[in-house]
Structure formats: C-alpha cells, structure tokens
Amino acid sequence: MNLPENFLTKMKNLLQDEYDDFVKSYQDEKSLALRVNSLKVPFDDFLQKSPFTIEKIPWVTEGYFYSENDRPGKHPFHDAGLYYIQEPSAMAVGELVDPKPGEKVLDLCAAPGGKTTHLASKMNQQGFLLSNEIHPARAKILSQNVERMGIKNAVVTNETPERLAERFPSFFDRILVDAPCSGEGMFRKDEEAREHWSLESVEHCHVRQLEILKHAAAMLKPEGRLVYSTCTFSPEENEGTISRFLEEHPNFEIEEVPTYKGFSEGRKEWVTNPADKIEKTIRLWPHLMKGEGHYIAVLKKKDVDVDPHLKLAQPKVDSNMLKHYKEFAKESLNFVPNGKYVTFNDQLYLLPDDSLSLHKLKVVRPGWHLGTFKKNRFEPSHALALSLKGNEVKNKWNLPLDSKEIISYLKGETLQATGDKGWYLVEVDGFSIGWGKLAGNCLKNHYPKGLRWMGNF
Ligand SMILES: C[S@@+](CC[C@H](N)C(=O)[O-])C[C@H]1O[C@@H](n2cnc3c(N)ncnc32)[C@H](O)[C@@H]1O
Image (cartoon, rainbow, N blue to C red):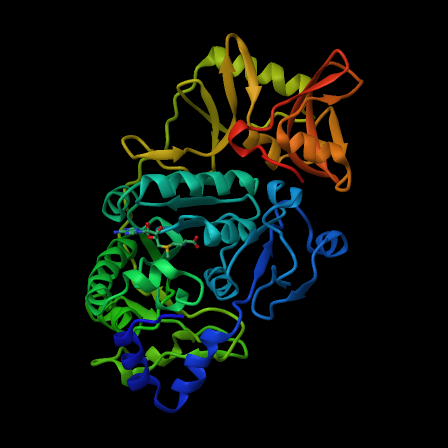
C-alpha cells in the first residue's frame, strides 16, 4: 500500500516506539462489521436468524464483526433494513452520543448515514432527529438510508451549519459533529483518502472544523452534549481543534466518558496550549484494536441560555389528499398513523414531534414519508412499508428467505398470489421489505425501480 511519504514521517515523529506496530497494521485485513437495526429486529431474533458468522464488538451494544466470506451487502435482510454495514470504530461514536428516546438530536455532517441510523436506532422512533448533509448528492444517499432503516422521526436537510444555527438556537439536547477531515484513519480502506491527503489539507480541515463547531455550539441547549469525531490521526484536527474550540468557547468542557479495552487517551503533548482534560478525549488506533483510526471528544455545555424564541412548525396540508390517505389507512392498516401532517407537492409526510418550522430550508425529507397522491388515490410509500410491522397491516405476504420468490420480488417481478384485493405488506422471513398490490391472482410488484436487483442470483 502506497502511503504518503510526509504522512509516514509525521507519524514516526509522533509515535516513536509505537510507529513500527502502527505501520505493520496496514498489512492486516480491515475488520468488517455490521450494526443491527433494533427498529426492525430485536437483537435476540437477529442472532437466531443471522445467516452470517458474527462475533460481538465489545464497545457497541448493536455491533458485530462478520467474516470475510459473508456478503451482507447483497442480501434481502440488507434491503429490509435489518442492519447497517459500518466500520467498527465508527460505531463507538453513536455509543458516546448516547441519545435517549424523546430527545432532540442533531447530526450535522450526516451522510451517508452510518451514525445517523445508529442514533435513530437508540431513539426508538421517539423525539426529533435532524440529519443534515451539506452536499446535495450525499444528502440524497443519506435520505435513502434513513428510509431503508425504517426511521420515522428524522428530518433530512441539505443545509450549511450556519443556516441551521440561525433556525435552531439552543434547541438540541445532543449534537454530533462527525467532521469532514483529512481521513488518515481510513487510508487502509480508502485509496481516494490516500491520494487527496496533504499537509495543507490537514490545516484546511482544522479551520473548517472550527467553523462547523462554532455553529454547532450555538444550537446546543445548556447542559447538552456535543460529540466531535474525526477519522484522522493528525493532532491539528483532533486535540488541536478541540483545544482551540474550548479556548473560544469557555462555556464548554470536556466530559469524561467510559472507555473500552483498546481505546487510548488524547495526546496532550502533541499540541500547543492543550485544553484542560484533553487526555480524556479518545483515540482509536488500528494497531491497538480491531478497527480503523478515529478520534472522539465528548463536550458539555455549561451555561444557562436565554429562552430562544422558536417558531414551531405550522405545516400546510391538502384536505383532499388527507381524505384519500385516511381511506387507504382504514382499508389497509390496523391503525392510522397521525400527528402533524405536511404535504409537499403530491407527497404526504408526518412531522416528528417538536419539529420547528422548516420554511425556506433545503429539506430532502421533512419526516416520515407516508405516500403519494395519484389521480384521486393514495399510494403508500416504500418508507411506510419499511417502518411497518406485520401486525400493523390488514394484509401481508411473507416470503421465506430461502425462497425463489424473494429474489423475484427484489428483481421487480410480479408474483402469483390469491386473496382479497388490495395493498399487501411484503415481508422476508417476517420483516417488512416493500409493497405489493393484489388483484386477479397476481401480486403486482411495488418494490422501487431504483432499488431492484439486476442479474442472476
Ligand atoms: C466524515 S463524513 C460524515 C460521515 C457520516 N457521519 C456517517 O457516519 O455516515 C463528513 C461529512 O461532512 C460533510 N461536509 C463537508 N464540508 C462540510 C461543511 N462545511 N459543513 C458541514 N458538513 C460538511 C461531508 O460532505 C461529509 O459527508
């Protein structure tokens, strides 16, 4: 593996005796892992049904290593949102954000959604999760992952931290800044990160990180938790960024959090003017644990803010559309999902509790997508299917994991079926995966075209 020369020299100076072990770790295979989505499947059920060879990751409640012979990315359980494939060190971040159901949580740099889907799983569909991504194409991928994992209480935006800070002053209980960084910790798995790296990019990232943190700080409630993480080793972007941030924000302090075997301390001696307790921040090293390089700092806001005047959402909803939706819900579901509805063009959504006005923000997903209006009828969305359980619908069509039909369904083919006419929640081994519409002994396939499997399986 070709590692940048300047990077190696810098690491040698920093790590000294440890350097040889560090460099050797680049010859090891990267660790493969997945995180079980507790919104879709209780852990015990997953362990019983898992088709993979898995082993618990000590530092993550929901995390498991899988073996290199497994292919969890191309599996019906993946499409059903039973797990998210995620780097094992990255899972430590969600554990330390530790959001609780009912809280208001912001993930400011969220795409493609590894950590957002982890936070959502811990929130258990209760509270308000704002997942933001500044790059439009990446924000779309984030939104797709929110959908695949069956998350109901997330809003996805494509905004700058600055514009969000204007809208959400002192609002969130917890904020995650998983900052854009020079990516040194990902060199083992990401060739692009190796190619784009330079000493200048490290400095550039440090400046951008401080800017993002400044806006995050303004959005946190007093006593709230701000978690900062990177996937790089450079002290400038880790202890350096945090020390500088704390200098500029004396109303924040480093919080001590429990760590695990293989986690290391922040390095005071690697920066000038280190913040008090900087050694209580966390470094994850590839030569000391089974995972890539990461840095995590958990901060607490100490001050008491003035009451910010927040503008609650006053969503607009088309009453005709709502009528059709309620008819669909009465015919096809065992309950009517309700709350604050909002219509965007021909789409119907439910806002999470505590939503503020999203007016004039770039919104990719304003909440739980329920469906679309088409010529005086309502068509349920894929997001609705993925977040429903079998006992919540009138009709369901279960396809066993080892059946040919599940692959046919994922390819978009029509299935033979008999039963009452109408919408059926299609399941794989009891887990919702999409919709089908039954008429005349055929289950018409409503698996989204863009997600359909191609080729032979
Ligand atoms: C480390 S990645 C996030 C990974 C994500 N949290 C996950 O777990 O899947 C950092 C993200 O920050 C975004 N970003 C880049 N510049 C930014 C800026 N100025 N403000 C906010 N986010 C930015 C990048 O597009 C990228 O998606």
